Length: 252
Image (cartoon, rainbow, N blue to C red):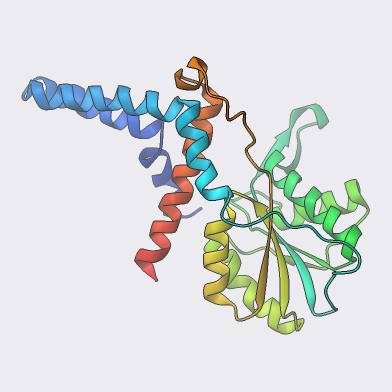
């Protein structure tokens, strides 16, 4: 697990709001005005982050940058093309005797890759390491492809811990198997950062295959301005991606 995994909870809601509130309490006894500013900022920013109108407009900026992919048997690519699925986390299924398997997000990515495979018959590459668990994400994704969709993943990249490492560690695999084109499968909101990283490390053609869109009703009402736990989660995802994109430009 990288340092960023420990830092992320404190620079994103609601961890950021907790930090601001603690700072407010700390400063309140010595500098009351500064303390009040921190506390008010903590509450106001948490409310903003929890508002559906804020959350879904933020996520829209990310997930509308690349068009939805539509393929058929007639426009499938050649033997030098593959489908690459990026890992999105793992989970424990208590109802299946505490089975260690893919998270819901990863399962949906794998399912879409299986759909593309049935249309194109292209090989699937799964990518994702481990945070200390026995099984890597690549192993779990490969098992899901085989057990749920009857597909054997051609290649597994099982060393990476984040999107940047996935793009880096997949580069020699593409070269070894002579792939010059890939369909990149990940959530639509994750696609902008993924494309930046893959274009950095690869000279091959990367075709975005976004999925897992956040869909919502654009008809706003009073409920669009009230706190909502799903909206808070969506805002956190969007901010995480924006920070990742800024980090990419800062360190490249």
